[in-house]
Image (tube, rainbow, N blue to C red):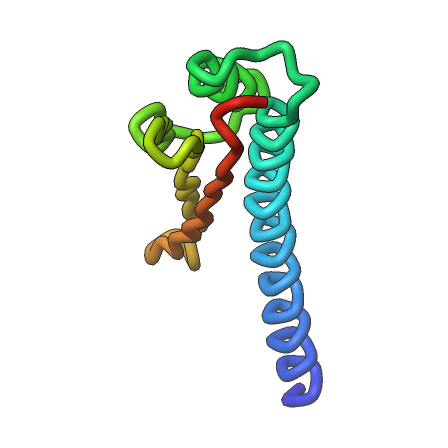
Length: 116
């Protein structure tokens, strides 16, 4: 009886770790999806204007069901040094045992020349 209970506890722990792992991978994939979209919009061949990038990112996140806040996207144009900067912070959470949230914070910052 003790061996069976031990194996069941071990299987439950492994199963829950797999569940947490899958959700962690989903959060990571969501961030990489947004990061790739931002990098594509910053490329020189992109038809998206620099000032329209936050709206495009928000639309992309909304279509994918990704929790991205408009307040976390920042655009800077430094005409003195000749750079444009796009940065955003992606925060998502995962509930541990439906009681304690674990927060994951990822940041993205990219600098491009003002004149392309």
